[in-house]
Amino acid sequence: MPKNLLIVIMTVILLLLSSFAAYASLDLYIGDQLVKLPAPLIVDNSNILIPASVLKEYMAAQLKLKFSSDFKQITIEFPTVVISMQVGTIEALVNGEQQLLNAAPQFINGEIMVPLRFIVDVLEFRLEFSTALTGSNALIVHISDDLAQLVKAEGKSVTDSFSLPEFLEPPIFDDTYAHPILRNIEYIGGSRSQVFIDTKGYSAYKSSLLTNPDRLMIDLEGVKWGNIPEQELDDTIIRRIRSAQHDENTVRIVLDLNISTNYKINPRLDGGLNIFFNYLMGDVGYYRDENNVPRLWFTANEQPTFRVQSLPSPPRLILDFNNSTLVNGICDLKVDDPQIKQIRIRQFNSSTARIVLDLEEGASIVPAYVEAGDGRYEIILFEGTTEEYQALLEQEEPEPTEPVVIIPEADPADTAKPLYGRIIAVDPGHGGSDPGTIGEHLGVFEKDIVLEIGLKLGQLLTEAGALVVYTRMDDSYVSVFDRPKIADFANAELLVSIHANSYEGTEAKGVETLFNPLYLENFRLAQLIQSELISNLNACDRGVRPRTDLAVLNGAKIPAVLVEVGFVTDKEEETLLNTSEYQQQIAAALFSGIQLFFLTYR
Picture 1 (tube, rainbow, N blue to C red):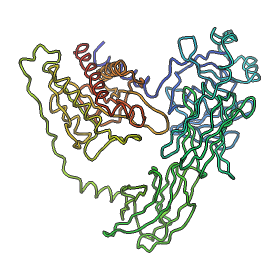
Picture 2: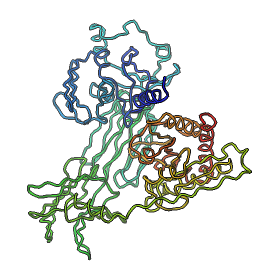
Picture 3: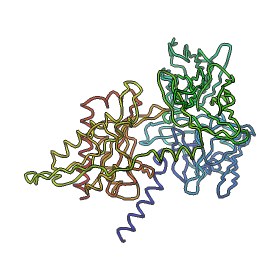
Picture 4: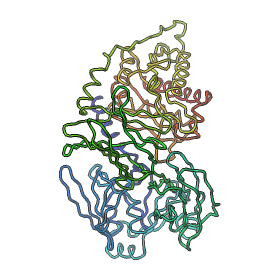
């Protein structure tokens, strides 16, 4: 087989296998049946998605599909519940009533993948995650006896003669497994007053926001209480956390609140729930500065993201702030301005705060950027259209200059060293005006951490006889487009870009290595580096992941990887990443992976 054709085939295979976080090794049981999956389970932001066809075979559901080129809808009919979903959207209908999904259905390789947890909750079944005794993980959906009998009567199951494996037989299927235990309620805090509910295994839950007094009530079904002590808190949103065994089958958790605000619950793959409350927005105002630049300002406990709409009739600019609550309620601001008639502040829905600028006829105004300081955020506005603002930015942008490349000379005395003469590009991410991610606990800058790791890696490579080309050696800004150019100009043989990770919405941690799947050698380099990092750091293995949207990888003409060496949003990992000792460990693992790549493939 020609080499180029082999590379193309391998690339296609990698793309198919790695588009999502796939859990091919996770066994799924529905009732007492081991499901023969037509496609691997996938995980989207801690939400497990399964092929919809499984519901037909193992849960007596009727599936109705409605497809067009840009519209894929599936209706799932159970005996008492009808669920309608659309690929790519989180909106769903349950018996005609609108509900929101934690993860949107996906269409992958001819299969519609649907969120399992949502379906289980709607049917009031129970989901368990077990790692017991079989050598592989198992996900078990406990269905009702009535549905199990219906499945058997209709002959839907493809494994009617299957018997439970030994670890699920009654002598081992003990009370701890049958009734997950609430082990802890951990207050994490932060700007969104995060709380983690730690349960051993999956449990169904119901939640409701109550008033007089304000409180969030969460009922965990099929869970036993673990005698969790009450917590009095000094938090902006949460005043107290208490819990108790509400009845024989339910643990009730109550979060007493200082202010009523919406929330989001993210179930975790291995059990437990993460709870996040909205950002709190306070005062809103408007003025023009000494340069006559219009500024819209607001106070908040942290800056929320926002979406922008410009509508022509009547002319208005709409800013929707995500996951945000207006502390002071709705109001209208009268302004004396040639562009703006008035400003209206509203709670658009439970998760969205909306600010509307009613504009004068013929006026046009768009947000340019945000300035922040001491809980006050100012949105600097541009008087003109989005296109005009973009044209102004391009006009003011300096002419690009060729990056400076410094290539050291090889020392003839080093010919016996293992990497003698190898030219390797080391790319510490971010830098200068681009700090990268900023740690939530110590406030460390990603740019500083990765620079230290990059310099330490370069020293190890140099000692092994390599010629190291740095994209930066100090706190300077280098364009992501120039970084692969530097490697190219230096005739480097491979490029390693070093970054630290961040994530909001889960207790994410660990190490991952990203690669462009266009070339097989990228995958090989990523595998070796990831393996050495995990072996040397004893870190959580987030695997190697294909990415086609990263400029530093897309612009590389040589084997290249982008390594995320840990999460600065995780307190433990941020602390480690800020130490010289751990940085040296990371550099040593990267060096080992690079050396193995040359020994194995070059």
